[in-house]
Image (cartoon, rainbow, N blue to C red; front, side):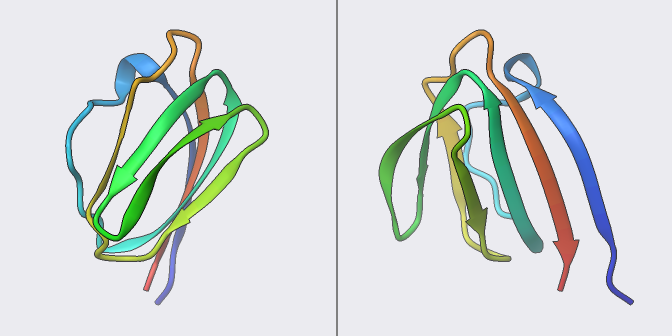
Length: 78
């Protein structure tokens, strides 16, 4: 069965390291900015009101996060 999980994350809870999730990940930047990097992903700077989706199994990470960063994160099982 599929499941969905949603949470709001602040920059202090995000670690600047590579991650690989086994679910689809949707993130919406509520406030602040960050750089998204990863396998097959050109580094891109994202600010408030930007959204991105990471397919299951794609290694990625965020870096250069502003102190006021807040993300809405929704994950879905595949």
